Length: 114
Image (cartoon, rainbow, N blue to C red; front, side, top):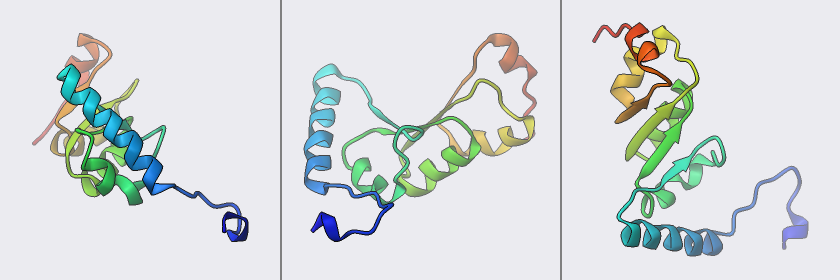
């Protein structure tokens, strides 16, 4: 069957994905921690609702990923970037539960008008 799929294609074995997600859910429970989907590493948003059944949420590296995580998974949403555009911050504070800064100086340099 796989040989009949035209390339380039991304094929996800849902059974194997669920098996791995169950492991991650168990780790969260046993370690009393949260595991977030790193969107940069895996941005196949069609399976975000499935992943959201097992993981605590997503982590993003900028505005567009943060928006994608919020819209497609709708769970906890974190963002970290080496630098933030001041123009993005007003939307990021609405989309994200956690915004990680590199330094206190970076945090102080951001102006938010809500």
